[in-house]
Image 1 (tube, rainbow, N blue to C red):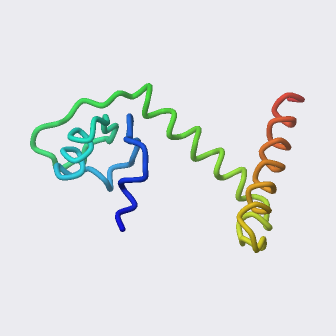
Image 2: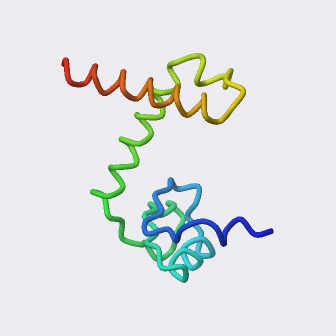
Length: 102
């Protein structure tokens, strides 16, 4: 069973330098996506980077960081996927309300 057939096609792939390979870039381009990956320092031909879109990666990582501050979420205490998703939504709402107050 191929899991890839059930996933939607990626439009943009944000990743760090560890994913900078021609194979990954070609696969993403063939699937219709755009790789936003900074090039490694040893790359002979530098590839331009969309820095504005790549900056969004930082925001996503910060959001995951704030979510993981909750011990229950980070250690996955919940038994069912529904209760885990409910707790994620609860923590996300708490983060959102705090951002409104500041």
